[in-house]
Length: 357
Image (cartoon, rainbow, N blue to C red; front, side):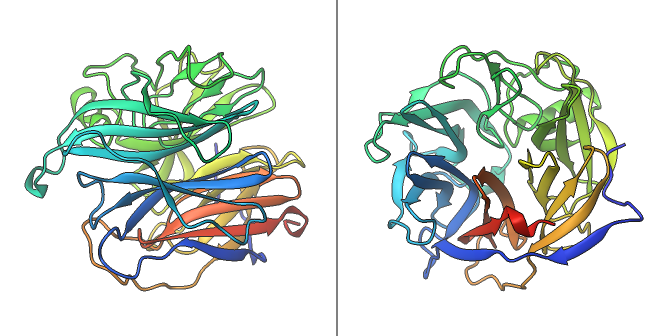
């Protein structure tokens, strides 16, 4: 059983250097969320969703920035904008293959007025590519009906898997653009077959499956993929794959607490598994914690990345929680953690791996 309730559970602070990549001063373009970070060549890149005021409102775009030292960052630039007046873009991470950097964004169309906030249509995944990190191609429609939680992640053997809510497409093509096949938590396939912030709710209502979303996975030494998923019960669920992501089990409850937010999983160079999240169930997405495990089951060491209370400055719909939707990158002797703060600012933290003792 995957748990973070070990009797040996230890929580300690860790030195995390923080820099703000985005800090809106006024209400216009004040919504920021869904951040991701990667390395491409000699630069570090970051992207996030950026809306005028409210979460997932029509017109939401994707911004990006880059840095050569992780401290000094270029003024954010627009990476993608929705192609329709009622379109919404959600930043969905990066993938690097050779000399090409690919950026992903989920797209759907939404009613222009907030009184019908739930309904979406024409959900699909877009990508844009660059060779120099600054001049991007026009977005390409991958015709995958998903708004991803994270970008493609390689498993043993090189297969790429996208973590969605309940859908986890995979490809054996290393470019991360071609060859995608659909898969997801059992029962699969389901109707209607799409995965966004409406689709996973409809499936739970229709099939009586758990209300789960926003997955992130790690692979243990036996080859099993463990896709952890957020739930509204303030505890994580897990769906497992024993065939490299071609099929997935039904989602079952773990014993790992969570505050009801997106999180990110990975593995450290020393073999430890990790999750960056806000695990305190009753918390307002605070503190932000890095939790590690030696065996992928007992997550018993916790490192405090940030626990400062930050007041929201700008009002907006669905702007609850402080440290939201983290993503991570292990890069040499460092780990980078990126997240939103009150869905306004974008913070990047740098942690030296030698401090994770």
